[in-house]
Image (cartoon, rainbow, N blue to C red):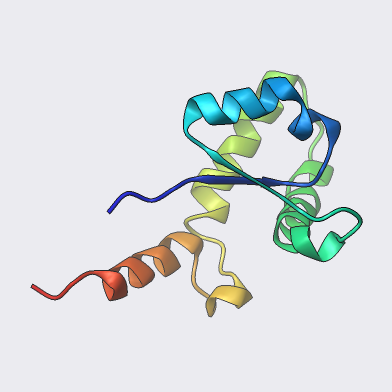
Length: 109
């Protein structure tokens, strides 16, 4: 089963530019944008970035952009996706939730 990957964003100029839209198309990604002046369309992304800032970014003094980039990527992949429990997912991590979801979708052999 092939899963389409969607890139969801607000309507910032960096996301609506021809270059970025061409990049998404070249990469096989589907673009999704929130409606104009409707913050609720982007609530999940806004919530994620709020958590990222509160739990990591504002607590650190970054010695370089490279250090910040590496630390943030590790926080997302190792902690946020695999360890941090999310109330909207029934207090499971995203990885745990996804495993259960796909197991339920798999045809019984």
